[in-house]
Amino acid sequence: MCCPVEGSLPLPQCDRCGLQILYAAMNGSHYDTAMCKDGVARKEQHAAAERAHLSLRQTFTAYGEELERVEVFKYLGRLLAYDDDDSRAVRGNLKKARGVWARLSRTMRAENASPRVCGMFYKVTVQTILLSGSKTWNLSPASLKSLEGFHTWAAWCMAGRRPLKLPDGTWMYPNSTEVLDEVGLKTIAHYIGVRRQHIASYIVDK
Image (tube, rainbow, N blue to C red; front, side, top):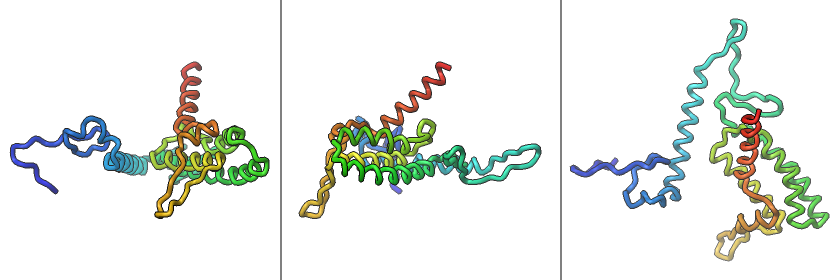
């Protein structure tokens, strides 16, 4: 650990990752660095661990008897975790969506459907399963990244554009924004936001 130089002022602390950074990096560019993103992820993991620890100390009773504590249980088809972590629900939806996508993609290839038509069928079938329950998810960056990864990969397949391995061994990936536009889709974060806004408007109106 480095000791501060005598007479020097402490470095300012990033309001996102909590790391001390140089004044020159406070113009916003620090937020885009891998160091800042890793710091944010570590803070979120630490907060999740703290919530899990506190939740284990809670007890619930019914008619004077303490209820059994379980880590996860299924309610109306959705997996609910004791620590309010919906990563299990996300993984369950991904597994179901992959199965539906495997069957749907074979049909679309056989029919030689256009990318736009494929995108429409994907939204109605695969995406509905993928985002089931997402309106109330406690979504971590890792879970969102997994959802976006599957979503983008499906768009590449529908557009007929796959990653290419170059002669030097590196990979060249299609532009995700262009591919999503080609198949008529937006990001998963957008669709989750729309669903949450819809339920929020419903609650306010009622």
